[in-house]
Image 1 (cartoon, rainbow, N blue to C red):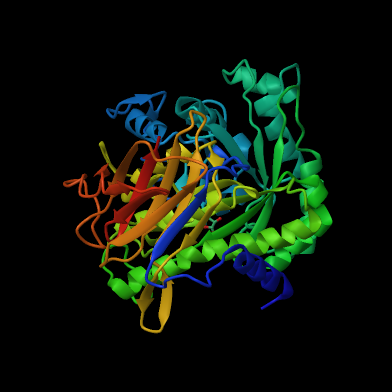
Image 2: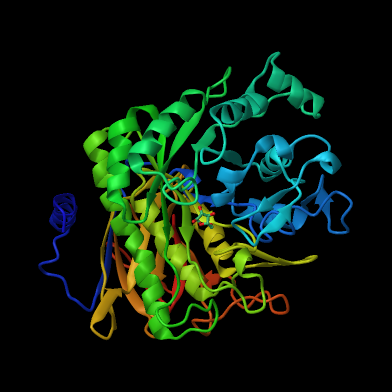
Length: 513
Ligand code: AHR
C-alpha cells in the first residue's frame, strides 16, 4: 500500500466510530446540518461516440426518415433523455476523437468526405452527423456540449479553429465559414477535452510527452467573448496514479479538469450481459465499488498539487463492459442491460455524490446502443434500460447539497470475499427536500436500514423502487417494462429518523419532507 493510500484509509477509519458496530446491522447517519458541497449536475452526464449504432440509428436518422425526427435527430430519444435531465454530453469520442477531423463534418451533407472508423468495426463514416448536428442535438436536449479535440492525429491549428468556428462572435475566417454553413450566432461551448486516452488509442504517449502536448494544444483553446472555456486534460487509465501525478505536476495550473477512465468490466466467469450467475453478479458489483478507491487515490494525488481543489476530476468514461450481444458486430459494443447494470449505476453515482468536492463531472459510456446504455433502439422501436431508470431516479441529486453520511453496512459474503450489502448517498435540494438513494447489493436478503437524520425531521416519507424477479432481468423490445420503477412505502418513522427495508437486489430513492 503506498503512503497516500495509507493516509486516505486512516482518514476514513478515523471518521467512523465502528467500535460498537453490530456487524449484522445497517445504519445510515445523515448529517443534514452539515451540508457544504453541491453535487454538480454534470456528474449525471453522458458520453456518446461515433461507435456502432450510438450516433447513427441512436440519435441520427436523417431528416427524411419515417422515424419522427427534428432535423434528423430522433425525437423519442430526445424526449426520454430530457426526462433524466441529461446535463452534459461528451462527443465525438473516445478513440474516435483522435482520428476525427471536424472540417469533414460540416457543409452540405452530400458533399462531406467519408472516413474509415478504424477503431470501431472498420466501417465507413459518412460524416453526416458533425458539429452542427451535435450542437443542434445538445440544444434539443437542453444540455451542455462537451467536445473532445484531436491531439493524437490532429494539429494545434485544427483544434484552435474548431473553438473559433463554434464560439467566435465576430468576423473571422472560421466564424464566416460557420455562417456560410447556416449558423449565424455562435454556440456556447464551455467544455473542451484536449485529447482522449492519449496513453493508448490517442497516441500511445508517456505522461511527460502528453503533458507537453497538452500545454501546447491547450494554449490555443481560447475563450472568445463571453464563452469561457473549461479545459479538460486526458487523465489516467484506472489505477495509473503516476499519470495523474505527472499531469498535475507539469500542467495542473493550466487545466480546469483532469479526466479519469474506469470501466468495471463484467462478471468473473461469464462476460455475457444477460447470462450470468451470482458469482458474476458479486464480482461485477465489487469491481463497480472500486470506483471509490480510484477516486480517493487519484483525488489524494490531486490534493498534493491542488489542495484548494480548483482542478475538477472528470470521470468522462465509466460503466460496465460486457460481451456484445450474440450475432452483433464485435466492433459495435452493443450489449444488453440488466438489473445488475442498474446496481452498477446506483453504487457508482452514490460514490460520485460522496466525492462531490472533487468530482465535478462524469460521463457514462455510452447513452444509446453502446456499452452501458440508457436506451436501445431497433429501427423505429426504442426501449429504456434499467440503467436509464436509475439516472431518472437519481436526477433529484443534481445541483443539490450533499449531506455527509456515515454508512455502517452488514457484509454480503461470497466465499472468502465480501462487499457491503448497502450503499447510499443523500442530498438536500433547493426546496429543502432530502433525497436518499440506497442500493441493496444482496440478491437474496432484504436489508433493514436504520436511518438517523441529524438536524432534520422525517415528517413525510415517500419513495420509488427499482427491482426485478431475477438478477438477469432486463427489458426487451417485446417486453420493455420488465424492469421499471414502482412506488415504495416500506418505511417506519422513529424518534431520530426512520427505518426502511430495502428489497433484495434493489435501488431505492427516498424523499424526506
Ligand atoms: O467507450 C469505448 C472506448 O473505451 C472509448 O473509445 C475509449 O476512450 C475507451 O477505451
